[in-house]
Amino acid sequence: MASLKVIPPPVLTAWADNGSLSVGALLYTIAAGGVYPGDALATYTDAAGGTPNANPVQADSAGRFPPIYLLPKSYRFTLKTSAGVQLWDRDGISGGGETDVDVSGTAGGTLAATLTAGQAVYLSDGSGGLTAGTWNLALSTNAYASSAAQIVGFVVADVIVGNTGTFRIRGRMTGFTGLTIGQTYKISAPAGSIIDVTSTTTNTRIVGMADTTTSLVINPHDADVAWTAGTFEPTEWTATGGGTWTVTSGDVTAYRYLVEGRTITLDIFTKQTTVAGVVTALNITNLPFTPAKPAAGACIIYDNTATAFEIGQWSVDTGVSTIVFQRAAGAAFTASVDLTNIRALVTFEI
Image 1 (cartoon, rainbow, N blue to C red):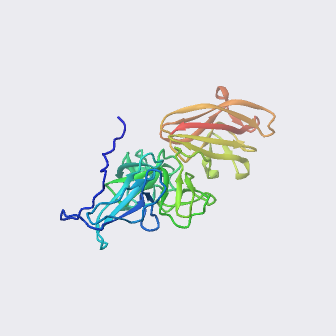
Image 2: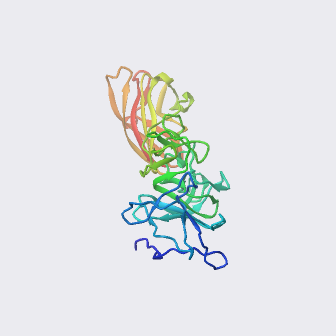
Image 3: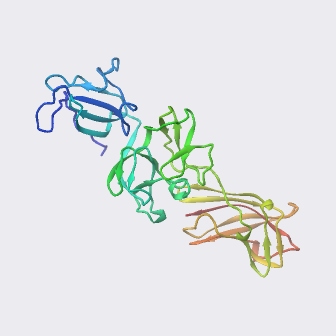
């Protein structure tokens, strides 16, 4: 069944806490998650949207408000007495037909006691020891909290960890400061922050583009598809058997990875590497992710002059952060054969 809405009252009436009419009450209309007056959001006196109401809208001597027509956006309403005493505050109220998509869920994580309005969050799948199905602060230093996260969004209103809050996953988010109009933004560090894409982060997950200096149009895509450069460490390129495999940074043309959901693809291209002795397999250890299942595929193995090649095999095993490369039919790598340069796209579930 589709999401249902409660019938709106034909005439909105303001009531005080003691049950009496609140004469001259003031209704402040604000963009969801925002504050007045910086995030004030207009309402109108007619369905055509020709004439905006004053903001705040004021009730008459009977506590009744004039007609209030909403934009197709998500609102926050704050009702105060004529003297400015707050009676109630409601956030995430739909104007109907809006492109903003707000969902409710449980705030989670250990990085903060409270998730604050405007912070970037993601829906956890349980990675990192967190509770699956909770909303946690996004963080670029952890792939599962940024580039590998399936759903990201923003906190609409402050919520204490463990409580139910509102999170925006599509549409427009307000309440920022100092954004550059037209610039694309991504998850950053510290937790919950965003930064423009020209800045360097460990993992890349785009969240949207600034349409004003204080608002961001959220990117509704799932996991980002940006390649991330792997960190080259010579000691992580090893050999199995009685010999050695020597690889320098200059030998590595490509070593990068792409995370899409629960799948990682590594692009590996080496040249001019050196094998000494007899080696039964070449290995890249300490991968950025651990395989969740075994996987294997074909790769191309060249000689140093790139004139001879053969089809080899790569493989990974569950829980072992190592790629193993082997020649066809189990042949050994030797200095005389010199088939030690690898070209492979390695894909496995994480």
